[in-house]
Length: 494
Image: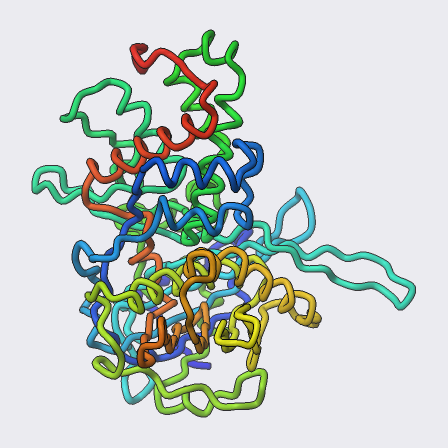
């Protein structure tokens, strides 16, 4: 634990509702440049027929049901559209951090939030002075609810995940043409309303970062099957009543679809609202300095723990084995290739953490292969960890295995026609290490900085037309699956 004089602290602040109860900063390694692979679609008669079959004519859009078909329609781009930047570049070390926030409210028991992110640099000197200008970038937020209940053996606490969101950011420099568009399911429905107008030069600021430098995006949006499942369910549910379509028109029905997949608001989040109110940096750029964080939460100085790189390798895991050495740039395969292994690695590095956080798993190590006597996937877990104290992980691990196969693996192996072998060590608060062998090829190693994976989520694009194309194809697929759904596209948007 390290304390310092805080130049931003001017006077004692009143007790806030949100309080930092834990803060761990761990020095990272360095990484290869990360690539941008937004979701792309491929609408064709074969994909439509496949979806009609697996959804029983549009009646079942669960992620497990459409997993095999999803890859025939939607995938992250195989060929990346460019590299994703990070403050000061991927070739420097920095701190990744985990903050636990306790929020007291008159509406119920205290709520816990797990904030995870990374700093602009490893801002700590040899005499352990922390740089107050070191920037804190937030990558994701997990909100937990602890419920106390009585059992024959006493009182127990049950922890439930209330929300698990990426915190995505983007550019909004319209003058320079440098504009990022979000591609979350709700943004697809925004784009559908624009597509109805039939003009190519409309800029839909609802999908940009004009109004806010940071937005929430469900971690499940990183899984192609969940992303597609949620989008199709929202479309079909709001378009299944012809009377509603006739009375409201297509644009308003799309707005109804949008409401069914509405993301959580940053402004409605107690912790972030405090940062918006008390700092100019977060309001303007979605990030704050360490000094500003200390100004808002002076208790950080008493709970913060900084772990340098030389100590990271000695940290034990739940299995008792030490962590791998921090990754160094160039040790593993680059992310700018379009090989099958790289495409798999890009998808796995986003899909696996989304399942883990649903199940309160922060770290998992496993091997998986379908090179078995019966050709079915065999999974062996060799490490696991959770952020829920006292939780029996066994049933959660079993459910993780089931979801991994049915929601992720089945979407990659295309009806089990591709043989593979995979070793994964995924720490959602740290990094993801993957070793992948596909179709009998030699194994390839990959490393992704999980602590910054919101930067390269597939729901971000620099091309509004790309977003509009995905929205158009999704609408076309949904309409063909449910051919009775028709409406007049000539109505206008209010």
